[in-house]
Length: 120
Image (cartoon, rainbow, N blue to C red; front, side, top):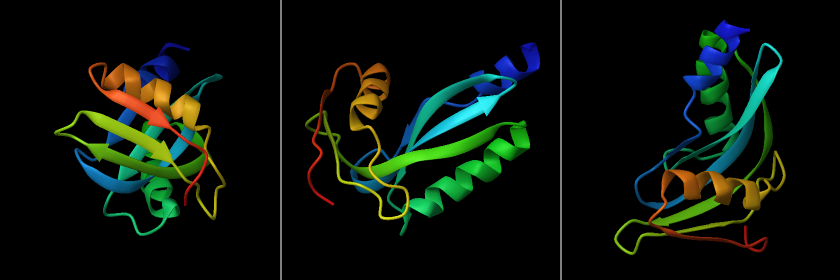
């Protein structure tokens, strides 16, 4: 319904650190029968699960459910306007980096964004 759609709309599609190399997770957020996939990546996270657990707690407050679709790493070169998505998560497996890349392109349209299935 409307409330569920509003809750989903309040969840940003992409939230990542402004630069550096860091772990990321691709998460399917659901509410009231609707869902969308979101990208979260932060340098403070020692494990992919750290990012997922924090997001899950935030989403619970909004009344949304979630599941982790996988993880990897993001290299964000802000000065060069380049982002590279690669690697995988030991716990969650490899995210579909192609999906992550599309989400990142929407948020950073002036960047060169690439992905590869190699690397850890």
